[in-house]
Length: 223
Image (cartoon, rainbow, N blue to C red; front, top):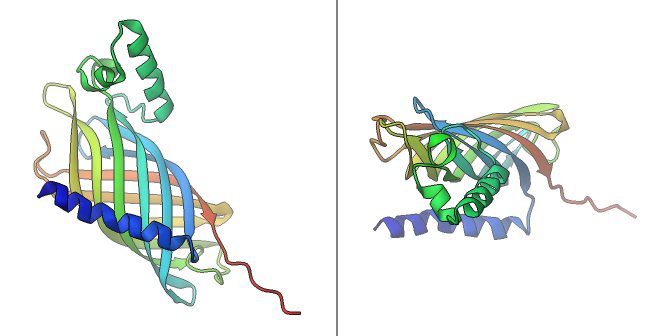
């Protein structure tokens, strides 16, 4: 049953992305820091945004989007992919342990464990101002919305060790767009799975600093 739910959740992402290739899309890349509220483990990684307007209005729009994040989680908040590779090489070359051992034993980084951090949301946004549509001339904008997500991360248990977890959740998401294609996004995911370790009411909070890579249709020139 769980596998079926995951398939039904991920499948729309594969429908959305190919469709965007043949129409106006919004793209972005950034860096995300995240944590389960009231927990000491910190996740971080790169984010990749893709969205498509489904309703256009004057200086505003509604859009469907995803903001995929991938990185790592540990108690120190290392939170980038390159240190994960370095840790893998270190553990693999030191005593012959494999990368899997380095990321599953309790003797990992800083006395804890490195875990994979992945976030796969599907979101509906209301956009206003900058970035809402091609014709908008404003130098700032914002967006608000929500959706659902599937998240893989880690948490620190009552013994002080980091453990892996994954969950589906309900997302509240918003952000501000500035000139120079800068985007600041804040997202909170309420886990549908309760509790998670010592957390009775788990909320996964994220903040992302992104660079928008806007795609615009070329306007034809009249002869």
